[in-house]
Length: 226
Image 1: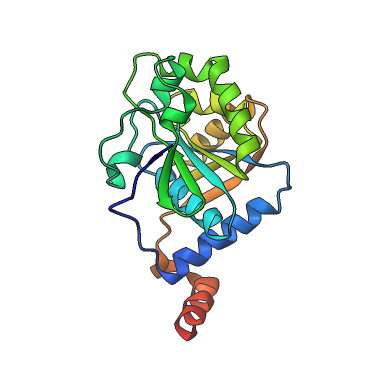
Image 2: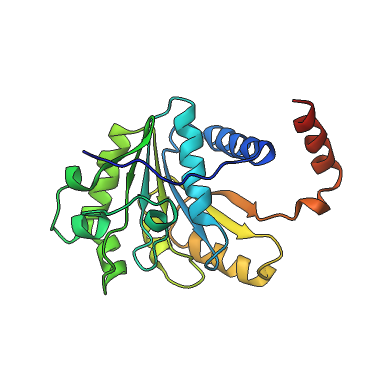
């Protein structure tokens, strides 16, 4: 297994860190059988990749062995965003038979957390994700890790997320606050349901905290007291 050390990691404030702890706990209460999670969104830039990464870190901090798979084969941002440096092989290399699984598994430098990056952009991402090689890989990783988190492209744009969801135990939809219409979100949810994957819930992201209301005020005060 290769090793990388992230030169850049998000420093989460108290409120955000608590939100990830709550999200982590809610997922754990979904049941022991929920180990493979697909995360998607309706459109680009809603924050699903950041949510995927920080949720993986949150699980790892509790001692759970977790792997994050970057399955956004069309427009991956993880390697660049977290300054991972040169990556010799990724998911596309494995799915196309150019690399073995051991070649693309990377230790993130964060205790208990490994990662597989997307790899080189390919002309046939959906076909690669539909290949039995992907499903077999996920099943193997489920035996080796407590949680397998899969970051996928926006389902409102391409079908890849629904393909990945077919081999997952649960799916989570990340939606940016006040960014998309109810109808669009509903259509994406219906598309996700066609995969027959259990939808665990929705993460409302990028909420304007100046409009935090009662609970925001409560948690804000609580954080200051801590």
